[in-house]
Length: 247
Image (cartoon, rainbow, N blue to C red; front, side):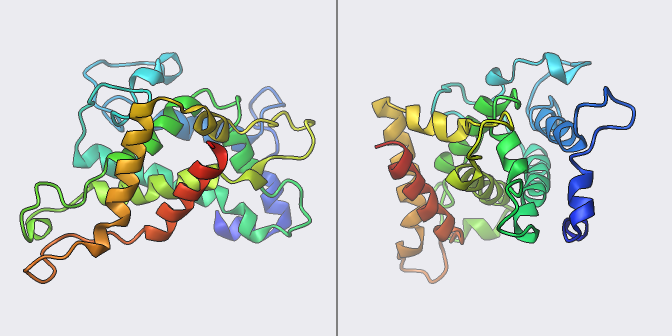
């Protein structure tokens, strides 16, 4: 996809109509819809014993990845689910990267993000909540046992990093089109972040972000005995976005 984004004609290819479709739905919209469905696919990205024939019938607000803001249940998880989630989020980031290749004068350079964060995406609320909760609930130290991160593979860290990157990309105010002609005038990620008001939600978010930001400062008697994370810049951007949109 990055090679295709380098060419202006190929960038427009994704926003042409599906050949066998109704002639109106762009292929990018279909692709984003499929990826969002896969992010809440039972047995693939969420733990569920139910077999679902049509992912479009799922109530995804009940399949949020992590307890926290707007969701109290503790869902099951595994390294397999985390890995699948991470790969799909990386593909979404690749789709969003069109802005890198498009000229600054191109008003449609952020159309992938604009579509993903709009009402056209029926999963926008559970996606926002899942990404935010996964980031804020992550504890790299765990039980605090020295060198415990050397004994097992942490499948959650790559997911947290990818979720954090997708989250801050979707919270970019520049993704808002100036006109309403496109139909994507509302960024629901920004909208939902600005509507958080419960004290326990703020406490959960602040403790999670603070825990991760203070991770490099944690000193121990044993050198390199505590796991360190490497996405502090993204955390600072998220904290900045929280302060900007929810004052």
